[in-house]
Length: 320
Length: 115
Image (cartoon, rainbow over all chains, first blue to last red; front, side, top):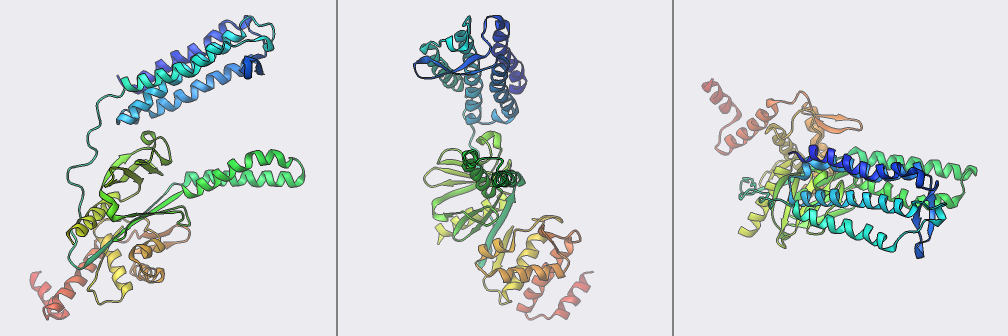
């Protein structure tokens, strides 16, 4: 059965397990109910029953939607399957347990300040989903991935006395749109502050986040790559900065792969060192394999010719 | 975009760059409407001045191969077709012929004999 068609009913069952018990036991719950406990298991925050229910539904609902969306491509690779199953089982159990323990603590409490949470329950909420995530990731790992590249990496035929370079560029307007929105928010907040509607302290709270969004969006909006005898140079953003240079003698070979954000965990710089992907859009990616065994993926157009030129230049260098 | 330059080519650099871009388009790497990488990127890859690349791009625009659009950069013109490739091949053929001592007129005679 298709993972996506299986994830829909399974996720609905989880959603029912998260939402149904509080609804069924609503008469025995205080309103507002305790939703957070501080040191010594004393409740320190409360919310109305409906807000709590919406929060619980959203916690699982968002994760469920994301997993259903990612299901189709996640099955293609072993890391994709492992993380999908770990997130699905671990996330489902986490949502169920957090809803159940909150319910358990509030059950028959006259007011929310009387709700007592068992320390063991908090430990269970953290440890059990983690254990289940690890186990189901392991069980759902499937067959090892076949080698991603052909035995024969692409090559070019250059005549003697010919010098070749490769230049390519991609852009993705979304990060730029998001940073534009961030800049607009910043501007509006600044105006409000100057006219005295909002105090500076509340702006200071969101300022760092906004600036980060702005900068990341700017740098992630476009990428240009060039290959010459010096190696591969990647330049980010509309100003061509920051720049990453990779010397040819570090590279073992290059090939092309189809990679998608759902496989590598989203857009931007993704993955751990040694298996990083610079993902601006799904599709054709240039994959470098280093002598050290590490790999770098870069989503870029015309990657086939870029890979071929890199392999040709490496071959020329070793022949010389 | 893959650009190849002949190191022994005696033509001015901007002509060589124009020829390289013409070849890349002619060989079908780029289809009408595709955007070219910015001149700055091409110049950086080739290790030459941006103005040289811009001069080459302007030459290709005058030939009708490229279109300059404000805010959209440089793209391959809708009118560009096999003619660009033939033109570049003919130029190469002419160079080859010169090496063997044949003039342009000899080449034309040769082509007319074929037809």
